[in-house]
Amino acid sequence: MSVIRRRIAVLAGAVGLLAGSTVASASAAPPAPSCPEGWFCFWDGPNFQGSRGRLSDCGVQYLSTWGWGNRIESSYNNTNRTVQYSDATTGAVWFDAPYSAYGWVPVPNAADRVERLC
Ligand SMILES: [Ca+2]
Image (cartoon, rainbow, N blue to C red; front, side):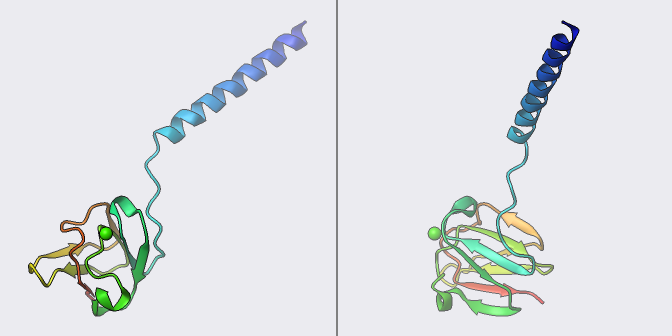
């Protein structure tokens, strides 16, 4: 009889552990957007959804060169330098700090120029 009671106690403990881990994963922060170290990435949709583009070079690049003009809605700068986006039509300019993610860029679907400041 005591063996059975012990097994029941072990089972109850296992169930408690499972319940605890479920609660922990539900409250965990969302995973970081997928973008390799040393690159800056951008997405067609907000919150890192849809197609992803990525660049790494220093200096100015025109996004239409890569088919990315006026498309970007979220971005993640996984480099050690600031990345500057701008919209030639309105003159709007915004910055992605090093190692920072932006689920919604300040001016969506407007960036046509990007510059990694090195
Ligand atoms: Ca878009």
